[in-house]
Length: 485
Image 1 (tube, rainbow, N blue to C red):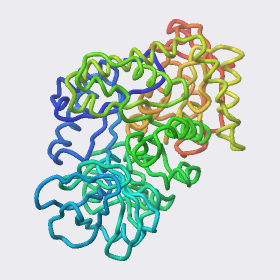
Image 2: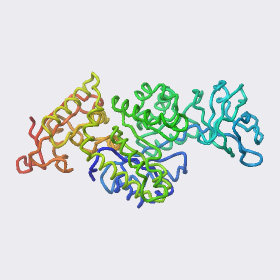
Image 3: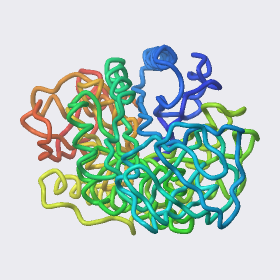
Image 4: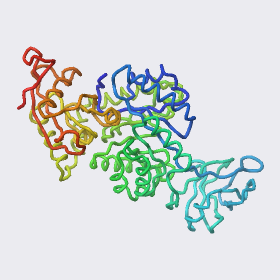
């Protein structure tokens, strides 16, 4: 099942898309990676969805990525004695550690770490920013605030603190339990919420090890302040525009999104653009024109993947949402200006063998126009570095590792295939050409370019580039062979 596009689609599974036949239909409609959102659902729910995904994988013979998304800390106010309260502009309102039910003058905020970090003048956002409070005075157990943006506040509404770095781990006890469970299931990517510092990435990686790839969700202003180091330490990046748009002015989010995409492209880290991409399709069978343009903009800007959240998890039209996203991506990539825009965002390679070889591949593709660029990779590094170059030729990635093939399902332009292990350069080149023929990327007589690392079996050694011609069976006496240029 070869996709006729480069950017990938991540679809969140939920109540509207839990049936195995629905998951299969979403995959056939274009979903490349499925997101399991551990903010909702039981472990049994996630196991059933995971097993359905793997059954579809076996049925279709195509590796499918699974992204587990951790909830992260959730900061919430307590309860109110008489139900929701209406706060007017200019009202004084106190938040404290007293667990007694609140009223129009105060409410419990059971998070001493917030009070420890607050300063006068800091902003508190309640209920996704619908109510805005400014701190006038604060101490170890309270914050006296003034209402700047009025509105109603009800029980257990969320609180955002955009102006300070909170002394909180991104991993709660729930997250640690969920993480252990998701890794046991076999998740390929772990999305880490509430990242504020580079050290947050290190904390997650210490728990994950090499069992999955770590993706940081960029949703906190503090993370944007240390963006480069956070991206360097992660394996992938998610632009979580929902929470980012709550904690930062909405007009700043588009520029920040583009900055993240440029940085991720430069560093060669897969990047997902997420949240409200086709939001109206939660309740309507077609998106707004603005939403279609939003998806296209992410594709033009070089996103590896775009993500559906409520649209596929709880909306009325999950299948239509995936199909629509597929059509928008394909149409955008057919635009004659798409390649011009993609090339314009290209950045210089790093001074490493992997980038030197990948850059050389890009030059070969531009000069010789081979039918396909083939990577042979154990860890996925070769394929990711080649994808960073955004070559005009499709990328066929061969790997003996099923886990690597699944992780590569997220990466721009990569069609991953689980293959036999190569023992030397000749058998590797023959294997590459046979696979290109079998998967429909090349025909007999076509030229291909192959990138790999030797010695084989050692991750991170991309150092070989070969040109070859695919020969028909009657010329080689086998399924297909190659002639090395």
